[in-house]
Image (tube, rainbow, N blue to C red; front, top):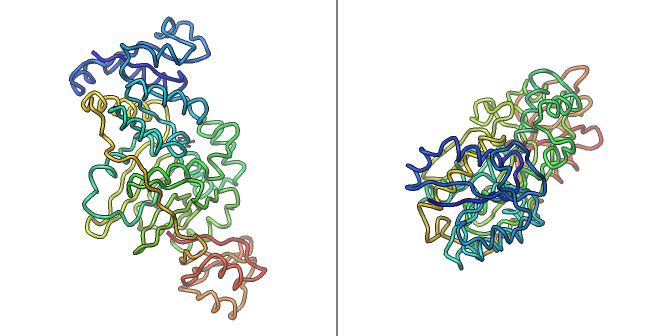
Length: 398
Ligand code: HSE
């Protein structure tokens, strides 16, 4: 029997404890022995809860407990999560985390510490929630360089964009709606400004390249400027707007970014609606893969954490992630990144501007929403220079 402790007994942490209790027999069969939650670290009290009598206040009561071999970190943030996780790894305990901020900022050091102490530091739930994507990138697609990862990695914003495009809600109404349903935080900036997706794509790119991709180097733009007019004209051109975290390898150039992008109606990511997440992965030999599922929520996230715990029991000597991100992968200057663009003007900008932008195919327009079309391959700066003053919006095509 293995004893587990949970750091942070909030939504996800309590979901992990419930899963360990409710699925006890199944987990014992999968792991080869029982996994029993014995302590939770939290400053709050939980009267009436199954763990009511097992709440501890100091990390030393977990890091210094020789009977505990498995630790779950579901606190969020980097401070004190980082020092707590590090202390547990140094004490020879396996640690499983759902915390993308921690992994994106301190992944290399924590993987290194885990390797030195022959334990695992696993974080499947940190990107894509319940979707198995870290492990496939680490172990299943290693025979062929990943050339592209395009992810819908934030459920809140995807839900809002679906409401805007399908229910015609404006941005503020969609945000209120997401908050009422409990998707968006009261302070939603990590979601709507793309910071959450930024950390997740940096983690996925790191796993695909076995090198550290620093989230601070990933240009990030959220959904705050998207209007119903953009979505309406994009749909008429045969595209949907999605907030994508992207990583792309082109020969020796590596690009990553987070921004709203147009996805063609026949692309698998177009079908991803509401709060769902999906990760599209491509390699020249493997072709296209798509991973789809719930990227957030108590039990979906807890299921990925629990599977990582089982992996720790199956691999007691560590090494489940067989690299430490000791090398840093430097991204190519994003200003060199060319793509086709959706551009929307208040009115038809005239032939000279259309030609300068390399307009492709038809244009669409309406009295309320303006005039839009798809450009040729351009950098962001070229679009701004060539479009001139009437430009209302410009989004890259995926
Ligand atoms: N706020 C995130 C989302 C939660 O909406 O996807 C999961 O990281």
